[in-house]
Length: 266
Image 1 (cartoon, rainbow, N blue to C red):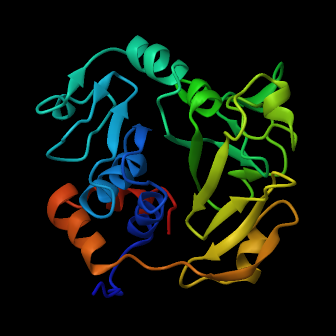
Image 2 (cartoon, one colour):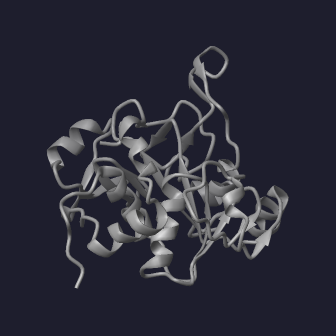
């Protein structure tokens, strides 16, 4: 029986929410931080046959500690393959082998589009951002995408200032018109306040669950578009005792995940 301790922090809850979206035997492309943590929680609990892949080309890594970058040497020992960026973005992504991609961004909108390019007008921006990295091909080619974001009106937007990584673009049918495979796209937005999913008809994000300590009203107030609420909306399931044991004793005994509290994930 899995009980739900009360001593968890919000980043642990978010990592567990991501893990629960991964199925056994999924091939998951991850970066560092929440994605790697989520994928490893899944492997140690309900999805032992899930496979992780880093953008750098490391396949099925077995890190002894949280990786600090996609090229962290801790990813190499015991990995099934140490390839290259071209292997991942070319062979695996374009070949249709990636089931799940984990992404985040400076702006995320109601269609799951992600902006990591500019804030403001492209030609005269308020600020320039790092750019796509591997996010664009992951968002375009993975079968489904899980998005991590802060829940505030700076990180969320009704429409992003620039689409670096396509979600559902501008609504139903848009991905298909752009040449992307059918039945692909964002699956969920996991924030520090809630879990939002996408309506199958409108392709807009709606409130599925709200995290313990918040409310439907608070989540809607912090969301910069008119947020639809699921008929069966309910509180997010907290981390189980088993999930927290995996995080604290196996994956992150030095509690590096706490750094996300300083970044606003509270």
